Image 1 (tube, rainbow, N blue to C red):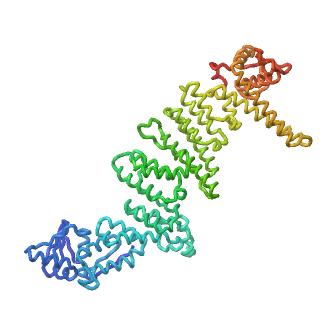
Image 2 (tube, rainbow, N blue to C red):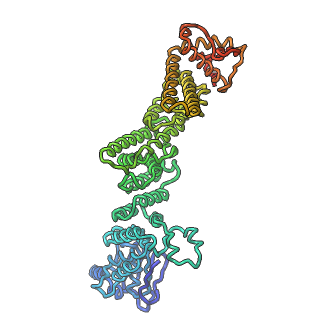
Length: 608
């Protein structure tokens, strides 16, 4: 810390209790000055030789036959006046970053200018400020903090503005050129501590990070912090990443960690001002700098403390641009009354819709202008699709989550953003597990969100045995798994006969097989009622028979066998469309016995 010593005489000021200060001298004191609650018994001559204001006050007191001079609202209080009085006596005074502002304001109040005496206190303080304080990073911050106690004097004397400009200028310096300690509020990093003694100083300071300044200014009050950050941004030398890092550090430093503390009324006004200020200071480029996680945390706090709609709207726009970076935990925004759900689903739905709208607009702009460096793209849409599926799985556990809300949020993501439906399947399964009171129609409506053709093998196997899913969905899963199996066998067949078959023939053969399977599935849907009756009849005869082939576990395997036996019989023998036969696929092979499984809706729970 920088300091300046003024005067050479020993300090002769004495105290008599807390409210009396006097100078020990052979001469009796001849003037009493009241500053706040403290009385100063002093001599006129040394004071009047340095202060123009004291000359006027002493003259006025003499005319009014008053023994004391009262100074109301003296800037800096008794301590600042004592510094000025000691300077007048020529006693030793030490100026530093903690008292220089108060001394400066007091000297201005007392009019201790060069017109009164050459080398007066105002001149000395000005030299100290320019030569030491404003050149020092640490001292500039300390001085700026002390200006609040002497407002508006420090503002009128432009000390505040000069400190802010000094701090803002130093933040944009090249870290490699910083020769002072950048660890004002933090210790040197481990790498700095363990640096070899033989390492040159220039090599040591290379480790100074670009955001070396962000923690140091966190000690400032929010109003001064806002002015410093505004000055930093106005210089245009700081990128958005550094600005956001500074704002994040300040928010962590001052915002409470507890939700209950945020929600209380004790410091709600301060927290509200803090959040609104941070939002106001966010970089103007919404697509760069701040992480989506930080923005969502700000949004959660903003909702809790009740910030203005304009601040929330700004946050929503920024979050919408970077939604693909978010995590499920970030999106778990606590709901506020009158909402009955655990989390604010409507807020997340609004964010997703904004994102999709922005994505569409940017795609249009890309096509029209030929832009290739847009923030949003196909990859980000896939990330959002996966994020929303994981979010749906999390909120599906909420017993108060309505089916309509679940469906709306699920449908907010376009189809191409979900190339695989495993995540959506898990979310639907979780919702069915937690909401057992759903009707048959509601269960079908919920399951219709999922495309069974986009399930992986593992998900299909799980869905085929899932007793919570409607029968039609299970049938569709089994059918498309068979389609996939046939296609795989066909590919192997084509590979083994590649010497005799062309690629065109192979594709034609596979396409014909798939078309045949699709026709079978169409017929299965038309004859579903008849199929259920046949399965019920076959159930009675299956008690004395055993399955010959073990393809799928449990009851789903038996349903699978019957389904494809029925389909093949339907395709190969037209007369079976009008037949009431309950022949199983195994009965079509000599030596095999018949087997079947119940497909009654009342016995559906036993499939898996």
